[in-house]
Image (cartoon, rainbow over all chains, first blue to last red; front, side, top):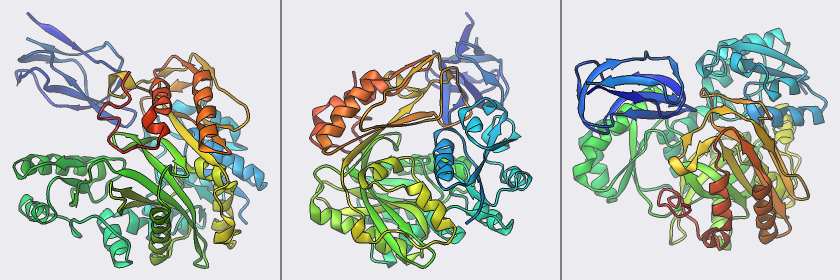
Length: 71
Length: 448
């Protein structure tokens, strides 16, 4: 069952650390946001494969925006 | 004296510098990014120049654009504030080459202190005590291992070009060194563009005590006493005060003497801060020098009754220091609390947003330095510092009482802030008794 990964804070996408097809463990950073000079990873809530990355580096995301989808 | 000062910064520090300029009858120029069009610091200045898009590297970190703004506004001096370009010796040099006065230390002093390994070498050579560790960049894990074995675990890996706690990693045992070294190297490269690391012995439960120094072009250097800044998160300060509570006179004298010796050794001019760690046996070690005005300078101003920013302007204009060492006295006690847009209940996660409501205290012994007002947008692009609450009194107890009241009366809605945590810090027995160290917050000492 696919699961959406949402940003837990507002920030700018600093780095995309995974790509579709990558296997991740629970707690792995899927993307990294930058907010107020801090780098904040958005983590996979469970183990699985990345189905889709919904954002691009440099893009501003709001808290609650979907940034990626797990298979 | 120059006539028009451009402040290459934003928020509370830009406003603070404008105030000092007005006091000396100087004209002021603000610069601002697209995101800061309506910001209070823009309205405070006589002129304002937009310098670029919201991301700092396109505006407040864009040296070329700031120099163009200075030419356009006919500014003949630039104050860098803190953060952004304040510790860029290349910027300071470019300012001078453009025929503009840089309000701060000489570029070469900024360069020397910006290279943390060079700073360790210079201070050690001047007789200032530094932590056991490496005096060169450790190029690989083998070398780091050798140094760590020599000084003893735990050790800390630090970035040579570091600052703000970025790229630091504590290592407890040899088996962890490889991973920590790789991670710290990566972070240093990403943050500073140079991967050089050095190793220092890690000090458990240290106090962070720093000394304000001030020098003039004639080579006179004085100290303006100490500030205790141990209450920190992520190696960044939250609460500062002066005098440092419970600091033995011998330690204090040693610190201030070392600070002046160190600053003299590099021919330091203008305002600067020598930072030290004080260990549980009251030994102290040079940590780094901040070659600029510090966020927490108001603490020293309230304690001594002297205006550091006015003094910076005068010193930059070539005037001799207006005070002799003996005239600089700690007359009062002062505390500063930094109010950040961060959520202390969620590991200090940033909390950008819009300030819906802002009520700030006023009254005897209360000073506020703020960069925001009701309706301000707190942007993701900049440092989360919203404002600083400063309380002073005849005694430390009175300053604490006033700070307690000031925190209770402060209301900020729309963004999460550090105020709830600051209230718990100031109310705690540890703080009141001066039993503080730099690891307290991460150890959960002030959790709700």
